[in-house]
Image (cartoon, rainbow over all chains, first blue to last red):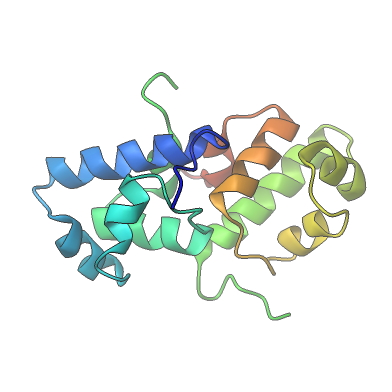
Amino acid sequence: MKNLSQKCILVSIFAQNVKSYRLQQGLSQEQLAERAGVHRTYIGMLEREEKNVTIYNIERIAIALGLEAYQLLKSKND
Amino acid sequence: MKNLSQKCILVSIFAQNVKSYRLQQGLSQEQLAERAGVHRTYIGMLEREEKNVTIYNIERIAIALGLEAYQLLKSKND
């Protein structure tokens, strides 16, 4: 599936944030997927910017990381 | 279509933010829809919390309002 971020910068901001917070917390993609209640391959696809993620899953992933959802949409220079 | 926010608080945070920024800028739902390039009824459905909005449309609506996307997911007490 083609990379979506050419069309939507937010896809790559979100992907980078999920990956960096996940690694900070020492979680594998499968562990985060399990916490968030999504399929175990979902986090990998999301981090490869292949997912047009919904607000539902943004919330579930934020909760799984112990963050506020808006934090996952903030770019480093915001 | 049933109200989605019982399942996802972010749906109502996003709906309230879109509505308040839209009204602050004196835009009708149809005017905002046109700017964001979405169907003219989409903004109404979104503000009634009937949409599981995607990250694509979060970005398009943020751009149409001249905001950063994360601002639309921030609740008043964040």
